Image (cartoon, rainbow, N blue to C red):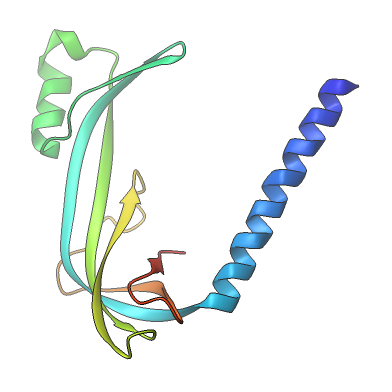
Length: 134
């Protein structure tokens, strides 16, 4: 019964955090179209063993792929993409254009994103430079 109550309490906390984030976005942010200035793709290799995670330094994705395929020391490792995008966007708080770096992390939701493309982000209405991707 105690375990069930703990799980229920954890679920309530997660749901509350999601609601707070959604309300914050709706009240404090406005959707804007940004123009991609650059896309930085880096990769690293990662291996989880129990509670321990081993990983390499970030490197070019081609190098990480080659290491994974050719070097026996990296057997059992997984290839992880890490992507950041630099954007130029209309900042409602500054009433001017601003730049921001959006960390897409391990997400490959925009696989063909390149310089010059448009990307929708959310810019804070009153705090210059504050943005979020969703």
